[in-house]
Image (cartoon, rainbow, N blue to C red):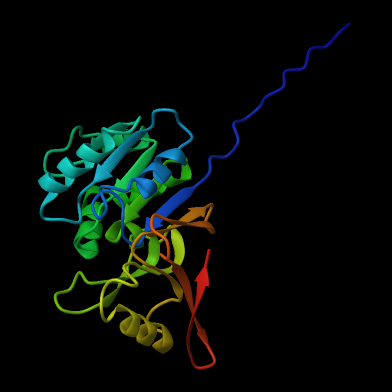
Length: 240
C-alpha cells in the first residue's frame, strides 16, 4: 500500500523594512526621484500600492497634491490617508492592503499623538510585521525609532519618544539645520538621549529586520553617521 503524505509549506516570513530619509524625496527635490523610486522598488511589486501620510503638517492639502503629482509619474498606485475625512472606518484593513507607507515631514510630536488617538501606531506595527515597507522623510524618518531629536517645540530641539520599531535614536537634516549637532551631542553625552544615527539631507538609511543594511544617497556627498558615547564624549563615524 502506498501512503500519500501531504507536505505543508508555509510562506517565508516577510522582510520588515524601514527606509528613513534625513531629507530629500519629492517634497525637497522634485526633480530627483532617486529616493522615492528606491522606496517603491523595495516592495518587490511591479505596480505597488503606496499610501502617503501627511499627518505631521498643517498644510496637508498641498503636501498630498505634491505627492500625487510626483507618484502618478511612476508605475504605482498612490493613495493618501486623511484623518479628518478617512476613506473608511476600517483603517487597519486600509493600511494593511498597502505595499508601502510614506510619511511626510512636519511636527513629529503632533503626528504621533494623532496616530495614538486613532490607533495607527498599533496598525503600523502590524503592517511592519506583515512586510509593508515603511518610509518617510524627517518626521517620517525619526518616528520609527525609540527616540528622535525634534524641532516640534518652538525655538528648540528636544528629545522625543517615538513608536520604537527601531532601536536607538535618529536625527534628520544633520547637515542642514544649525544647532542640531550641538544639542544632540549634549543629550547623548548626558544620557538624556539614546545613541543612534544622524542623516544628512538627501541620505536615507534602509533597515531590514531591524538592522541597517544600506545607506542610499540621492546626491553625492550626502552621509549618514552613527553617534555613540566614547571616552567621555560623543563620537560620530560615517556609516554606509
